[in-house]
Image 1 (cartoon, rainbow, N blue to C red):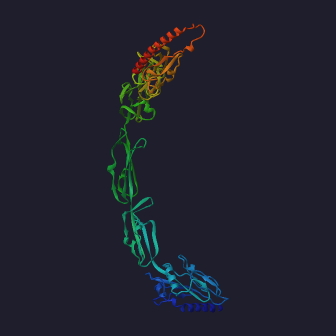
Image 2 (image 1 turned 180 degrees about the vertical axis):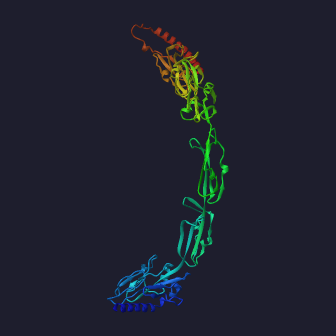
Image 3 (image 1 turned 45 degrees about the vertical axis):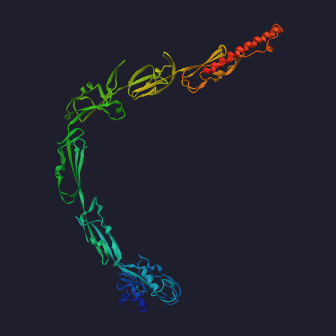
Length: 604
């Protein structure tokens, strides 16, 4: 009985507090909430937040959920507000319910002795702007502070609508993709979900296409919300028919399959015209009459799942003989030097192609004479070979490819040339060798060559290598040089008498030369004139034999230089006559020397 009285008193106090708050009323005059039973609080969904004197003026119904913090006495206090039960709070204690309005929370009214109840707020979304506006207008106590009196805090919630987009199979009506759902679009708010109208969806192994279906209420994807919207989009899909053309012997593909990817499910079709009777492939005439067709009845009908039809073909065997370059063949490259020979043979029948080898021992191709074998000094040399298959057989069991390879030779020419003019100075040497064989023509080099006018000696080689791989005709050039002679003569100016043996030296033709040192020879009793005659003593190009002369004059001897021993003493008259004679000779010699020098200078 006592507990019941306390509950009644508490309920009465709560109602008294609620009734005393003018902010608890909507603009329509109705209460914001009412208690319809001992365990239920009903939230009003009419009116607007503006009725509290401050909230958002956006269009749409709005509900206000009021939180009450009730303080009773310092010993026994209790807290009433939406969102959580803070337990007992003392008078003048601090409180903070700023987090109560966070989106996504569940709000409970908690009354002592009445338990917890959760109002249905599924149609509402928290409107923080309206709540703050309500506080700023002074129509609600602060969300935090000191509990020095009963507190009333208003939280506002807007009412909204939802949009649902369903993606459906047009044939069964079943979903092929999760629906797109949006809740809590505020009444009257503009929206645009036209991008949710997907053109294709892959599901269940099919590519569903909107182009094969339809969309009801497509206009509902864009607009201003005023009610819940549902949009159903229906999709269809294509199925595939594949006709394979196969060899009856090994199942190999002999023709690219016919494939129709766009036959709509449940539609009628007919593709019997795609079943061809003969297919030419790799030189064979594949015939359906020699094979069979699986699932031929499925080439027409009503489409109900992918269709695969296999058509198998038989054929005649073929013998092919190819005539090939042996060197390319060794590198796995096919170079045919003559049109191939082919022979159609019924399967398991005998064949004989040996005559093809006998008739083709020499083949002209690309300016080259190919041979299967050649006659050499040591007998027959075989270039070619037979590969791949037998030239004859008792029974053919599949296509036979026979390759006959042929080889050829190259010419090697060795030339002997003047180094300076390129002129041929000796008979060329010509040999041959098989293509891609190694060759060495070192032994054909000649160290010295004598011609009618010149003695040549080996200088260098160019053109093709002397040693190497014979991959084409080769042209090797051996070049030969020769020397020129430079002669220096030593002569007495007056008499042109040879005073010393000629000095000679050699140097390569067209090289630079310098024999200046040879012109500085000193000879006893003679004075060397500085100027030489003939060719220059040095030059950049020795373009032929050179000859130059160094000139000398006799050196005079004085009386004092006469030897004392064995010399007859001269008398004064003899001395006078001698002086006169010497003077005459000197004058005569001087005239001759001057004339000789002038002559040499003129010649120079």
